Amino acid sequence: MLQDIRVFLSDMDGTFCLGNQLLPGALQFAKVLREQGKRLYFVTNNSSHRAIFYAERLRSLGLDSCTPDYIITSTDSCIFHLQKTYPRARVFLLASREVAIDFLRGGFTLVTENPDIVVLCFDTTLTYWKLAKACAFLRKGTPFFATHPDFNCPTEDGELIDAGSLVEAIKASTGRVPRYFGKPCPEMIEYVLWRTGARKEELAILGDRLYTDIAMGQQAGITTILLLTGETRKDDLENSPWKPDFVFSSLEELAQNLGR
Ligand SMILES: [Mg+2]
Image (cartoon, rainbow, N blue to C red; front, side, top):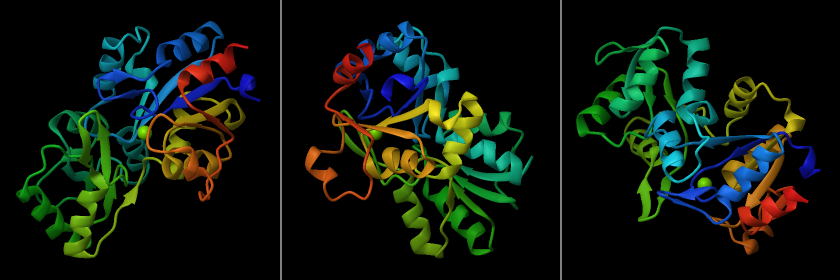
């Protein structure tokens, strides 16, 4: 039952907002959850910025209560897992300077020679030099990780080339593919469970993409809620291997259902 859910894990783009605009019913949904003593986290694959950036953006859009504690990025999941398998590793990092801070705080050393691992985020400061360096390390067999597999990132001005497409360029050159930590990987759920301290049956994942948001929730045995405000249209559901538990046309409709 929707009423039994204590912790909501919302996707951002296409579900709660689109770039610098909130989607209809977003604040109403957040308010209903607050009134019912339920928690709302934002789970994003977008590793071009840090959690603090997204929290500030949501606050500036009117979600006053949003702090970085309630933002979970694929970078956070990536760092959490790499700390277990490659603690204090020397990392050749493809990421913005801002995101590099998270790796430094995570105890990693950022290097441009002899790395232990290569990690790729949604690097909006990518250069040919970085790509060529990464490929050279990967050809030598250096372990390869990436935050998330998305080919494109939706914005209010259209799609932006995303980390998954950058991986394709590296793959074409080296034949190497990374291990991912964002949606829809089980590593992301594992991290979310740790971060929220919630049990699976208390959680629901909210998203606009069947093959990331809904796929991850369903594989993990978590309640899934599809919002038709982003990528997916109602017709897509018929042929999809992923069947969400609930489908709503908007957050407004979901808020009304929760408010009952
Ligand atoms: Mg989305």
